[in-house]
Image 1 (tube, rainbow, N blue to C red):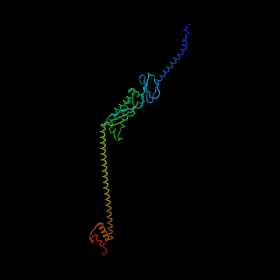
Image 2: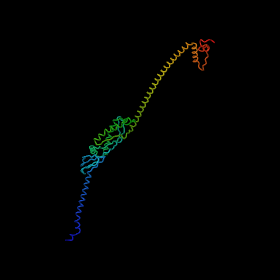
Image 3: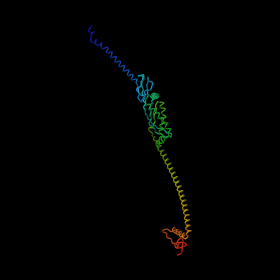
Length: 324
């Protein structure tokens, strides 16, 4: 036997062979497990609360998962996932020059709150028409609302949108009508649900502003003139009623006074008649004194004969009296 047959290297190769095969087997099993786990991980789908997941098989959408949580699919590349956001989003139109029913111009800026509804049919429609692109969806929403604003504004007078009297402004009706025009079309065409349409800003073009100020000034002048005329009419009516009432009151008072005076004169005549019948001389004397008191005042100087009436009584005394 040669020295080569009994070399140390040959002695070491025999025990190392089985250990190498074991190590190779372990490595193969571990690698296989890693691959299996990786494949299983690609089969698990996590669905957030504010999203939906579309399962696409070889590029063709086959099902929509809307329930939050874990779901499963075939491993990639057989099936893949497309996340679709369901959060509420807003889009603004910017200022749009629109015409009202009475041929006046107004600048209106609106906002639209929209979302993709939690419904598989509309989610697939949104995915097919807009390629799951929120910016493209926002642009389509702006275009729809801007186009329908012109139609909606033509159904309202300028005073329905711009008015100093809050009770005469119908912005709510404008917003509801605008939403009613855009909501069904966006849902049917793109699978987009409109939650709210509101007026964000409203102003006037320069020419319309000047015309509106002049118009409002004219309306205020007309209203002031009408109020002044109404006030003058009411004042004249009140004055006329007062004059009529005063005339009637004075006439009634005069009539009552005449009746009172007439009654007093009748009573006085009766008293005078009774006095005359009781003592004619005394009656003549008293009547003469009454007449003298009416003729003469405190500063009156009268020179008359004492034998003439009514002063004769001063010298002669009462009629029928005995001479001195």
